[in-house]
Picture 1: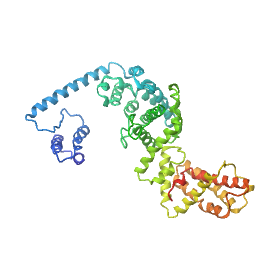
Picture 2: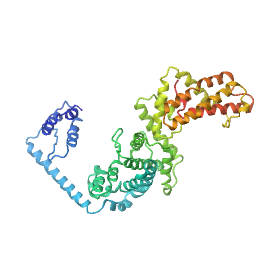
Picture 3: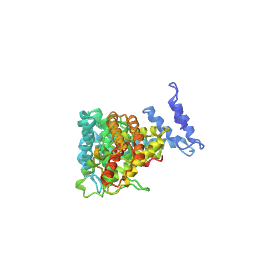
Picture 4: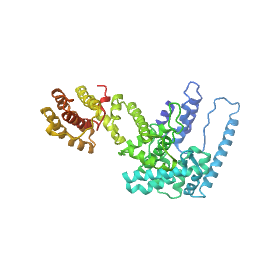
Amino acid sequence: MASLRALEERTPGDSPLSDARGLIAQAQDPARHPDDRSALVEYLLASGLLNRFITVSNTRPEDEQVVVKGNEKVIRARLSDAMFFWEEDQKVRLESNLEALKQVIYQAKLGTSYEKVERFKLLARGLAERFEPAAAALTERAAELAKCDLETKMVYEFPELQGIMGREYSRLEGENPRVSTAIFEHYLPTEAGGTLPSDNVGAFVSIADKIDTICGCFRAGLIPTGAADPYALRRQGIGVIQIMRQRNFSFPLAALVDQSLRRFDAAGAALPDTAGKILAFIEGRMASILVEEGFAKDTVAAVLGVPMESVPNVWRRAQALQQLKDKPDFEPIAVSFKRVVNIIRRAEGFTPGPVEERLLTHPSESGLLSAYRSVHGQVQDDLRRGLFDEALVRVASLRQPVDAFFDDVMVMAEDAEVRRNRLSLLALVAALFDTFADFSKLSA
């Protein structure tokens, strides 16, 4: 907004009050967009606390003082209530509210808020033990306190302060600063592209809480539709993806989903293939983000068409594949690799087995096996080092021996042993492709 940008560019000597008056004039201008009014609030928040307030009216009152006094009366009452809640809440420790969560139904099919805390506390600690073992105890403590402010008088009256009050009350009680910050930050991000947790502890708790919500809702059949998403599961899924990507948390998301679903065993039977539906849902959110970031749709379909080992690596594979697609010789590479994949998929009753060298009757067969062996170890080493672009270039180098193989031999030979052996050789090559993407989904 123009008005907010003008404030950001204000020189140190400018008067905040004069800025506010200018904003009032702009907000009252009927030609201006209504969003400009939010600039008033954003500016005051950015400026720090002031012992004054601003209100905007869409009419011109006969006596402005009547409006001023009316608003002052309302604000004084609200501030008086807030001070009372602030003082009352501090008469008990934040942790004491944990017991009250046992009486709060989180969702009829998913139990109480206390049970939810117990579930995601274990998930969060598991993440900490994996990525920052020294912070495991802090993470567990943050998860334990994360929902306690929901039972405070302040949050009951001002629900938008959830997380904020937990952070402030825990600070006053002397909790570790990382714990206090995590109590607030576990709600982040609150929107797509929003602020993410600034610390691992908050990130662990945030991921765990969101995964618990997604898994619980899917388990109970509360799956988002095109018309409704009452539990904001799409936003939760995007939040998990953004946090894992930003903090480079590389681990199989499927394992975390399985761990979360097991915590619901006492809640009765789950819907069939719940884990698969959850992973497909999260992959759908990833696909949307990747396309929004400029990756081609066929690139996105290809990288998400193979098992997802970790969220950060999905982006690395997409970038490596996009770079390869930009090369002038990519089209023949894609054609060759798609042919490999399609032949294997169409081979009825085929199960890959070990390649028997005694059955390699043509130099092109031996040449392809040799080329595969020469790059396989290098590709695995590149992947361990995070060099996805280099690894994919090595895989692409198999194009010539693959083309020679197709030119010189009949894959579907009449001899069953030879046919199985040739298909198994192609399966080795295809498995190397599948480290990156499903090349059959590429448009080339």
